[in-house]
Length: 516
Image (cartoon, rainbow, N blue to C red; front, side, top):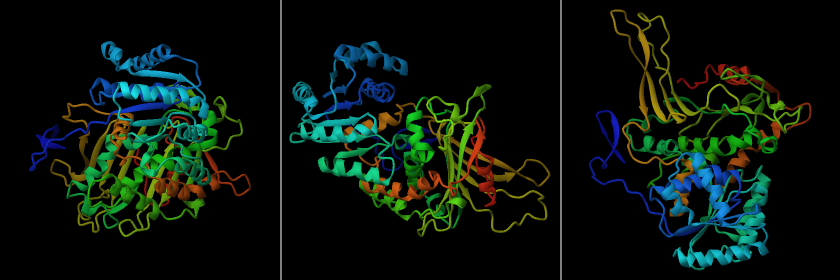
């Protein structure tokens, strides 16, 4: 925790109690990465692990075993990972030399017979590095391989937790609909207990997402007004400038609703809308997040509550950008949405009647993720006799990326003799005055997995509830009959289809976009 000094946030002791912040040291463990030759390992996992090692945030008693079908040995695997870490920009040759000694690789398929060598190596190196039998299995493979890997790891004895603990990290997408998610969950639960399973959503590893709870529950001035009595509506926007980035096969199956709404969007919403737990503990926090998902009003009038779009060619940063159906691997008549705007309600005491507007899309004008809490207008305009302009509502903006900050907009008198108003902003850059280490999303969730903290991971019931709530929208968006929804086209480099603006305007509201 930090104390406020001269309007900046600095590392220090907790005000009043004097207790310093403390990092929890991860347990010794073996980290086994399935799909270790793939992009996720190169671009995210290995740079994150090296960063943690370089900054002495990992246990000294750990090693990494990579498993994949790509033919490599230890030396070629280390060379490949060294290139990846160099590209990530956090390379140190002396530290790498020490880190690389802990990297091992086995070429194998994902059948029981192929895991015999892996089991033997994990046991041998486990003794050498004194990992106490603790094991983490990270599934960095396509989801189609999950069931085979989990079954083979368990039946081969590789996943035995007779000596220490065993944890399984599963990347999204966790299924592609409610039925497939339940099928995968059944396969997982046959071999692993719920406390062993870590369903990762890297968005939850972002500091500013976690700070939502701190902001709400550690400040007495905000929580009392965090309800239907004072809040007019909430906006959550995930705006991306990139297209599908050579992921046509995935995106043609997923679309924006599966890719963003089912996981990132609903998980962020659960942090915004949750009730305060009695104690800041993992399961208690997750209980409250699940209650939010359970209280979501079923999607029924989708013709009114959902706008779908798809980008066409346009200009972005002064360059020509091709349309979605012109992307390599995309069907020329594809009706897959790359943009969605949705209205949702939470039917509970705190939020009854407050609309939550959710919006995400690709090839948009700006890259940003932010939450806008817009408060109700003043109940009585006492300045009507001296002001000609309308008094706008106050708003709280919590930006998750690209520049992490919290902004509070309010009205104040304009300097001078005339009585007129101006909008002003109280701005808090999240990293202001901070000089310590900053962990990115993957570094954070890897640390949490090693310490066994599941607060930022998705629980089984929460996963199922999110699929169940979204199911009507998925079915509606994929209809092929005359009742299928309109798919509105928008130019690459715009804020999305004009229909999304009209969608808000019919409620007397407007989207809040990123203002650099």
